[in-house]
Amino acid sequence: MNKPSLLRSVRSHCLRIRAWPLYLCLLSAAAAGADWRQFRGNDNTGAGPAGSLPVEWSVPGDEAGGAAKSKNIAWQADLPGRGVSSPIVVGGKVIVTASSGIRQDRLHVLAFDVETGQLAWERQFWATGHTSCHPTMAVAAPTPASDGEHVFAFYSSNDMVALDLDGNLQWVRGLTHDFPAAANDVGMAASPVVIGDTLVVQVENKGESFAAGLDTATGQTRWQHDRDKQMNWTSPAVLRGKGPADDAVLLQSPSRLTAHHPRTGEQLWAYPAGCSVIPSVVAAEGTVFLPTGGLTALRPPSGSQAAEVLWTQAKLGPGSASPLIDQGRVYALNNGGVLTCGDAATGEELWRLRLAGPFWATPIAAGGHIYCVNEKGLAQVVRPQESEGELVARNDFGEPILASPAADGHALYFRSDAHLWKIEGR
View 1 (cartoon, rainbow, N blue to C red):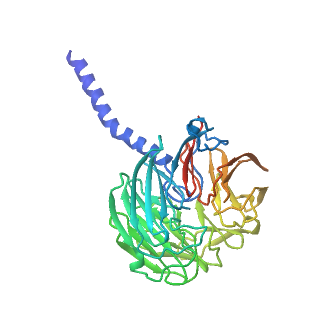
View 2: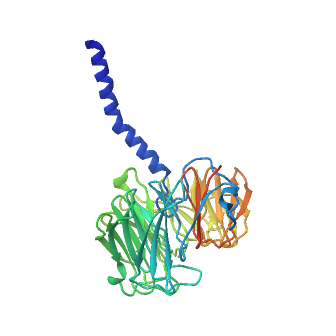
View 3: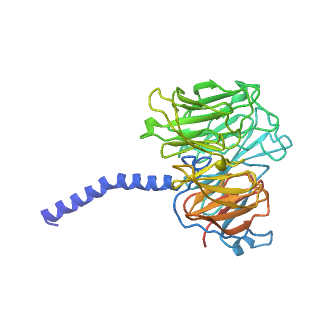
């Protein structure tokens, strides 16, 4: 090889080497965008990544080969015990929690291969806290969360387990040891949220109520605040700022909403109001949507100013399901099974659609549709339009479902007590 050719070859090789880390970063970002890492998705809005998703499917029966004959069912996996927590999708795995035993004191974390549905690993732990709960509920009620490298599984017993994506134990916290009176007889359901390197948990009841920020690497408490000693099942939410350093965590209690710095716990602002205790606050595009007075939109304050009320709309009041934000619209599903669509900027009601209820699971938006599954396991698919919502499909799982679905841009994931399903166009 002559000298000019050799130089061109070396230069080309160096460019490929320099481009490789960039390629890996882009690949990693693409994979993260397809993940569904916590309750209501990565940003807690309920909106999934864009993609082509099926609207119709049929669940397999018990007959041999049923899965292969079923429409748009990529796979179905068996689950132990009970569980009303939602699945999460991270690092090529679908992860769910469950609780089993007469007292539901055996805690499970299960990871399934996203492509095959095969069980990749399962870990089991004994509950250290209270496991009393309503018959329709489960100790595995909070949805796990992930930072992309670890899984944080939380339970109504106030046990927190941290694992890596291969199922290796990182740390365990039995928060009942610190707060022995933190419990209620119907169970607790607040899901944790990860913001940066802090894991935020919210535990509110008539005994000992608190919110805490834990170090994701060690489980050690970074900060802790006392909260209202009242029953509350809402989950913390993420309020994204202009950059990661400006992100805040929102904590909704029966008497107020507070915003905190996720790493220090410093209270940034508060909005006093009588808030709902089941549907959770959601934030998108710098606006906070709080279940109070129906639904109230707030602009977070700057400096020492108070939060600004943009609008309050009684018709957008959610029932047990949390509100959903997608593409400038807000969706609320009430206890009567009515799905209401409103303009997120003004609160104006755009349309209403009656569905077959009742609902516990929060709906999600994915692939241009809204997926709502009622407690009997009937998944109803709605196509949102400018002035109306169209019910385009009804898919019966044949089993009660209280858990919210997940979506990764390629598929949908639903879970009942007994099964986990991947729904994908075939």
